[in-house]
Image 1 (cartoon, rainbow, N blue to C red):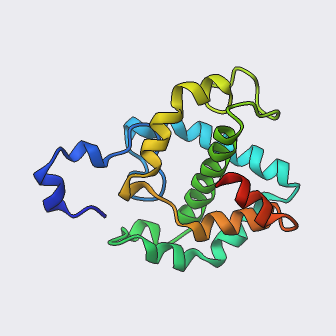
Image 2: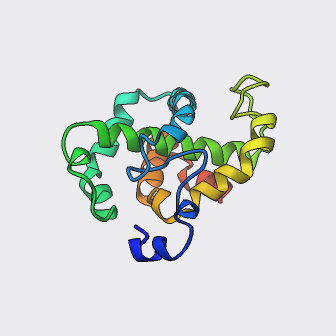
Length: 167
């Protein structure tokens, strides 16, 4: 987290995402809720392309749940119990990986509609700078552990090649 005294010395809004929340700190922010439906679509496409059941991804995230929770300083208790943390991590991780794929291909992805508001050339054109800005915010990041885990499940045979393509 960004220490409060630093936020108070500057404009605190520069530490808040503008388009998409990743991880628990800004999850549920009303200004960021419109992107949630697109995250759901990202999960569906990512999982479908992998040919694996969604449950396999949930189980994989569950395996590293405690490690992921430990990354977030002062994590609220709401995220420590139940399945909402694992669900959020799966959704946010798949979204970030899908966005990396879309950005890498300049929006020319075959498995989304050509006029998709996020995962298309148009979406890439209009959202790339905002999403990239949100992704690098200190309180709006996902750990590589999560992204690697999801990629290993989706692409076990060519994990290294795929990770290199996304870099």
